[in-house]
Length: 206
Image 1 (cartoon, rainbow, N blue to C red):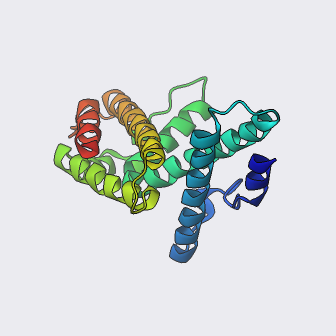
Image 2: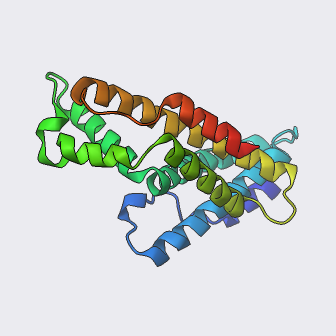
């Protein structure tokens, strides 16, 4: 009953929202606040009440877990968009084109917006040094959003969870980018690698 009451009163305004619809800076800030509140509330319930064996609790916990998964995915999407936006947008769009035309190979370099000059400009802004700086700044942002002054074990579990998910998405984008460059832009140089991304995430965590 207690858990169910918490679930009903939790702020779930972020459920169903699409980050791409949010244009205004004020709306984005409000969305992020609601999102981090959902993450913190769900995480507290899962970590505090999850281990308990209480009759009638599991159904409410299942709802909370679903909410946490939804909020986590949106949080990762928003952070990747903010810190890796130009690269991730290019990768996601090329990936979407490939899925749309499954019966033939679509060369993105033949499209004006993705021509070699434009992609070379994009890649020039993302070196190993840039990736390290991006990840360090993102780590500060994550900790500021998800920690309070107590920096409790429950909050640390949330930060670690989100950091792992962010690393996974950054690595995934980097691997797809590497494949795209190798297939369609062979004369261009990718200035960072998957190992650079993993190293940056590991260093920023400590």
